[in-house]
Image 1 (cartoon, rainbow, N blue to C red):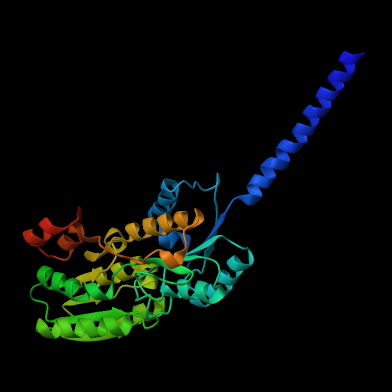
Image 2: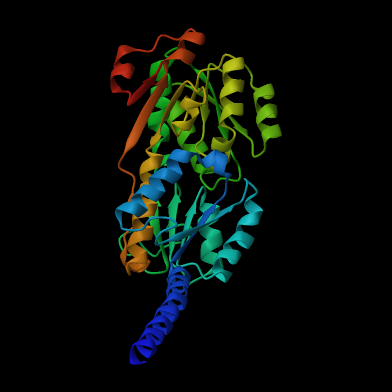
Length: 330
């Protein structure tokens, strides 16, 4: 009789455990930290490699998506006016950290939506000037991240274009007027162009239709300088196709353009920027404060040349340029 009572107690205990295990698993799932990933573009535009770099850096800090961290993705689909609502939604969902990428507008939208939730940004503009941080060394608030250089590389980019096309004296410059760096880029190109004896003509475009219109209004430039811009990256196939169709040697910023058929690119290693966003997101999940994490400045730059496009345009790439390239696409 006692053995039957003991068996019933054991089964009752076992049954209670069976109920408790799912509840414990559910509680663990609910306790899983959530990263809000806010980007101004589309998943197709950002590309798999950047997201992989972000996730891999998270993994290296001890967080694996779906296992011990969840990621809520919010894409503005290049409609920048959607960013404030998307940022507000992430705040409402009480994410543990917001990773803001794609443009400074994403970082600014996140900053406007919360002063409490940590923000990790990847931007090309001055974070102090934008009001995101108090200083690079000690950000002081709820935001930090990586500042990859764009405007600072303008003169170098124009110099590379001159090296590739020595006879170029008339250069068209295309910028997105919605980009905070647009005017600074135009000033830098104008100054560098004067020093090289170049005639610079400025053009602006913030939509696909305006890009078409800009190319239609070009007055037979010898070369084209395309300013760094997230929207332009999303239109890289259009931009490279138009440049090649018009037979205009063009230089762009991130390597995405060379891979899409652009002649030459020079800029910060963007994959490294996404890795840094992942590292800082992981460190914050472990308890680090954004106020104490210094803004990281880009130190990795890459030169990519598309030799196939050079041949199509009848351009002989100098041996010195080939030797200094990080990659030559054949």
